[in-house]
Image (cartoon, rainbow, N blue to C red):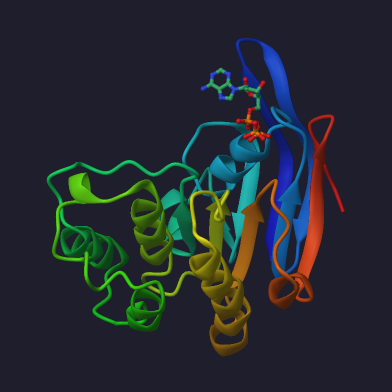
Length: 208
Ligand SMILES: Nc1ncnc2c1ncn2[C@@H]1O[C@H](COP(=O)(O)OP(=O)(O)OP(=O)(O)O)[C@@H](O)[C@H]1O
């Protein structure tokens, strides 16, 4: 499904990632690793957000050679999302729908379950950190991407939102075949853990 070929990432001449070959089948994956091991860097590469050496292939599209068609298949949510403060949740939903070229309302159940409907008309400047996080998670589902990449999806979520997310991810996988790649220092709850495969970033490579 997702193939990494000779992927290398350096910051200031220091090798952060060196992944000669890695293949990920569809599924739900939990990425672990020590602080600074390169989890966010790896997720940003896969999401098509930062330059790197080598290539990543997904759905027959090369990130280096067909970046637009590659990115159409990938949803992304930041660990600590930041949006222009004057935009409302609805503005951002519309923006993402335009980018994803969709009019579908696949996010409605998640919006409701995360109790975001009361905030969606408000500017994000008025949101708490947890509400901003919930919005970013919802935005990553827009357009039904085949792979949703979530960096630290659980941070700042309250217990109820945490369990909503742990329930929605396997449901989405069952209904739409969506794959998930997430990084976290927190373990998922039992409802999600049973569907999850663990990956570890270690010494710059990915260990299954
Ligand atoms: N923009 C950047 N410029 C320079 N170095 C960076 C940059 N981003 C990350 N790094 C370095 O790359 C390494 C990997 O960082 P990364 O954020 O990917 O780790 P992580 O596994 O996600 O860490 P954590 O668990 O603490 O969130 C670290 O040594 C970090 O200092």
